[in-house]
Image 1 (spheres, rainbow, N blue to C red):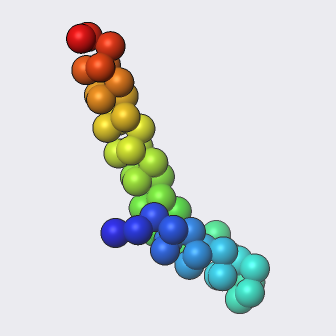
Image 2: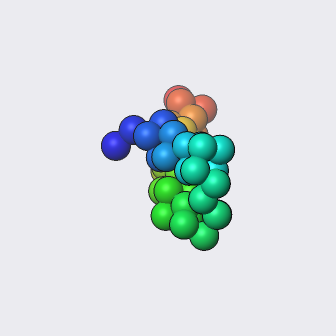
Length: 52
């Protein structure tokens, strides 16, 4: 569960293999999910720290 793995798959697919964006949609969606989860966790921690 390392977000960089999905980034590398997308980068290799686009730049080295010439794969279209349709074929890489799964990795893109996983990166968006990681970003959303990280942003949500950071927001919750920040709100908790501010409430002190």
